[in-house]
Image 1 (cartoon, rainbow, N blue to C red):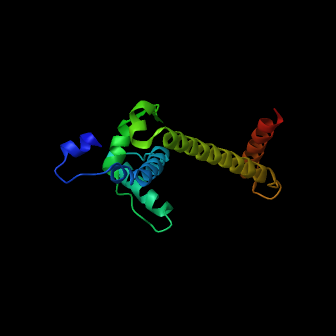
Image 2: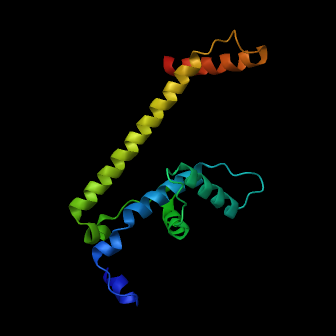
Image 3: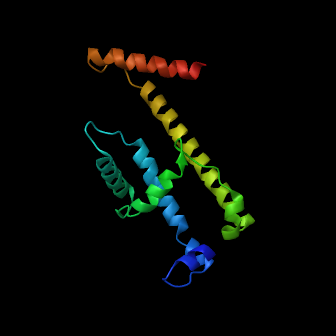
Amino acid sequence: MDDFNTGTTQGYRTRHMLTGKWTRINGDCQKFNAIYKHLERKSGENEADHIEAAKITFATQQPTGRKFQLELCWRIFKRSLQMGRAKPLDTEDHTEIFGHDDLRRKLQAGTSAYEAKKENEAAMMEFKEMEFLTIDVDLPPKPKVSIIRKRQEKIIAKYAQ
């Protein structure tokens, strides 16, 4: 906060003025980064095209169609990632801003939300696999039957272990 206030000509900012937007910025950048990483790059597509495709996907996933307008923040965020994972949080640097209890609570909430989402995705995948097992192989045309049987065998082997 002191560094910001000494380096700006736009007027004094309080701690809450500087941290108040962080939740939305962080959330939107995390969502956008996940979309960016999971979109498959098309042949001949450059970085700008890939980012634009991710922006379009982000907007379609928002209930109100809100556009992603934090590309500069995301680029900074992206640079802070290492091997696709965030650098470990240095609590020494952040306790001045958030305080010990606030930081611990925010870290636990983020971890809990991530774990819940991960469990939900695993459950959905398991449900879809079980649903796939119910396909009657006598109904589809012959070329599809062998593909369906092979996939069903893989699913059965996965859960038989």
